[in-house]
Amino acid sequence: MSIAEAIKNLAKKVQNTKDTIATEEATKNALIMPFISNVLGYDVFDPTEVVPEFTADVGLKKGEKVDYAIFHNGAVQILIECKPIGATLDLHHAGQLFRYFSVTSARIAILTNGREYQIFTDGDMPNRMDEKPFLVFDLLDLDRSLLPEVQKLAKDSFDLDSVINAAQELKYVGGIRRIISNEVKAPSDDWIRYFVSRVYDGKATQRVLEQFRPLVSKAVNQYIGAQVNDRLKTALGEDAASATNEPEPARPAAAVDTPAAQEIAAAPEPDPESDIVTTEEELEGFNIVRAIAVAEVPPERVVYRDAKAYFAVLLDDNNRKPIIRLHLNGKTVKYVTTFETSNAGTRHDIESVIDIYNVADPIRAAIRRHEREA
Image 1 (cartoon, helix red, strand yellow):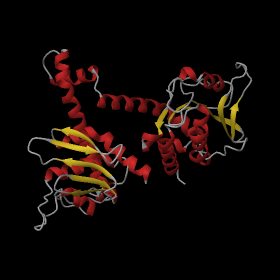
Image 2 (cartoon, one colour; image 1 turned 135 degrees about the horizontal axis):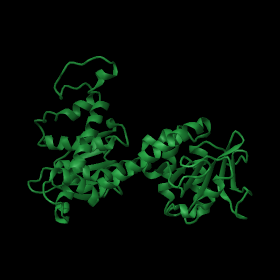
Image 3 (tube, rainbow, N blue to C red; image 1 turned 90 degrees about the vertical axis):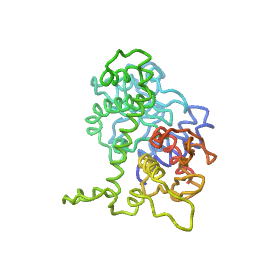
């Protein structure tokens, strides 16, 4: 089983049990031990690999223990401190990790509540655990680009030097990405003021900042959407010539090779026997949804079915796996329905098709729900 498959299976378990697990011990047994075993590949029942309630006597408070110590090549390499699921991960409650880090051979420390994982090393000062993690991930919302970094901690591919060398960059890049993510979701005054100072000649009063707040959000989402669409087009083969390092003659955007790309590029000819017409706006909406969804599943798994009342986007062409419904043909009211929690759906009013980017999180959540329930 690949690490991606192991994490996917564990994420399903987290989703299904997170509301019933009430204690730290239950969190360890149900979620953290499977992570150590199935994801990292260590034998939790072999004391030469995994030692629960690990104690080191040198300079430590009597009776203090770390929840797990993972051994590799006969030496302690990873320390794990556990909290109950749902608990906020706070370094003030992880004093054991700081103290044990300085008196063992471990260079990696993990703080987890079974769902979120924070991974630390000693990049700032040798033999002293950093106060900020270099890697943070949530099993229920995992950035797939982090999988290679998690893989480096696994038994069969443990690569301490690679982890340490990449840690500093990961820490800063991850921190910057989280800041950008937060600013995109809820722009701060400082973020708004940065753009206002460059496009507005007047004084950046609070009233001006509030006027620009939705404009900045819209501009950022449009830019991100354009980048994702470009990536999607490449994935669907429009830039296939670059893969062979051969130049490709200029051609119209609609002249694409793959069936999936042809579906995106232009609306199909209307069936003369049907009064259902797929509009350009609906296809643009489908392009946006597919661009958002490509972060979770291959683009060919996302398809549409047009109907009189709405334009449905489905996973695997299965009407029991709705991702979103687009209601774009109203003269004055446009809205979409997302299915992140159930197939009953949640309505979101929009002004234009580009506003679909504002429901990117529910779109991805709907896909993850269908994957978990598969």
